[in-house]
Image (cartoon, one colour):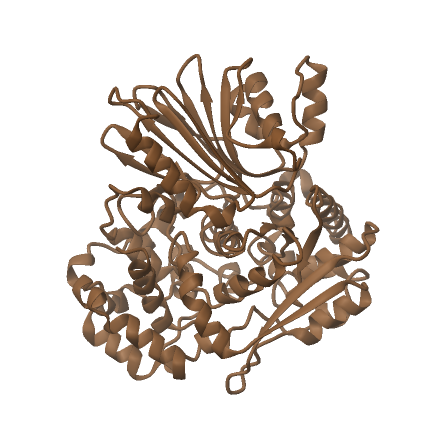
Length: 594
């Protein structure tokens, strides 16, 4: 796990010139938390790469980056982990390749030399990388199937820059920081999600998941999508019983968990106390792992809203004899953490649990460099409350907007400055996605949208950003692409029934205690950001009253005053604070100096 960056020039100047060298150094320095163990840079002609390293696989200097293979004429910067690198290494050695390191970075280089850009189809893991071809001058960028590893870019006059984080690109300068009206509409509709290639600002874009970007020496650029998810039952699966699906889930998840043990350092688990993370612990125990370090975080209660799920995480820790760490956080520590949490965000993310992951990761990183997390299970196994409505839907776009969107278009007009209201961007996006995706039924269209768009730019991005702020690599077995493909094939009724994730719950029986499986659905509770009071209210008010906010004028003053007057009654359909949503965006813009 690392931070990568680079600059390509197309105007005749060398990427190794002082301006480019300064850009690389500035971007790499901004990403120091992502890679505290080492750094490096490389330049040749019109190409310059930079890297920050978090040493997980092959801790030796032979795996430092940027990695150059003079014999093959290739150079790479890479962020992520290829879990099947040993098998690929054996296959490549049989073809005559010789290796100078023991890690996965060199395996990508050799795989690229043998199979070209489509080598990504052979990788099982999470990755974002850039490869330079010495002979052609071409640079190839690629991102993993589920977008677990981020990759942002900025197109400038005569130059192209990329980095693992948006703030790194901002630090290098010359970026158009105008707020994108369509992205703002998405942010305010979709729980802060902004679909690729957009970001909240016009001058920075992000490579979509499952995409290869090929950049020619003259600046011409083309993209290829190398993997496409289709949700819905297959004709070949009609004879499968529920027992067959349960066995398939157990086998696929067991393999995914085993793959994510690949490391030359210890691997822990972020144990929330819910089914998903509890199942990871159970599967690891079944594979014979002992002394597993597990970590849970909890907050103070606000009113009658409980701030922790320790009773469930304790149950799992006791049953599987883990080395368990409870992390209790009071409001004063949470409020102190908000500026650091916001600074760690590549894009503004409103979910209340971001501060929980941020503080949890800070503590976990004191014990391990790698931790498995249960993110993604709800999206692929149908665990959310809005899915049943789509099982009965006759109008997928209308019903999705009604149960998911944070605001309808009428409230959006009340919220945003008139100049920013140029269309119902979010509904149009959903309608286009539903009309063009391969899935047939409204529920399957919704599950595909959530897996391809919502999941990538909400929970997956949040876990990466918050964990990497402390140099912690988070691994997500539920987003193993083979698990995702399997879940996509399972009939929606088996997933959505009985409150959601029914087939996953059934597959977990006998592994996870029934008390955890049958508990009421919870979430990562941070009550102080749902019911904003006291110091949190003062923080929010200070952000929205700041001169920068008033000068920016994104929001109508009357709407902000309405939210401030009664924040606890102004919640989204998902039960999140609308006040926190607008304040978080403004706070992020101020933090980034925009």
